[in-house]
Image (tube, rainbow, N blue to C red):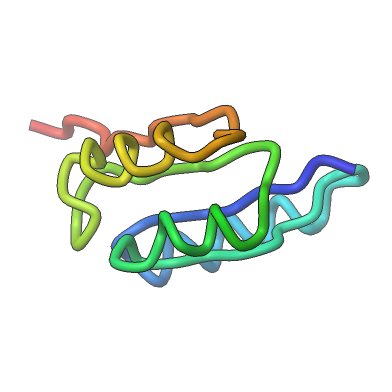
Length: 86
């Protein structure tokens, strides 16, 4: 079972990702956050993967990424960036 934490500043994005992931065999969402408590949730839940949105309250994600990388056993991180529609 792959354990995932979803972090994004937009509640709609977190909800959509959680629903997609939870409908996939072998994946379990163990936490989600808007960015402010992300490092604590990752430390608490010890996921295999962190899906980290860049934007909103998460900012560019670098502060969260630095905090997560400083943990004793950091997860793999996928940085989700907004599409450029301009």
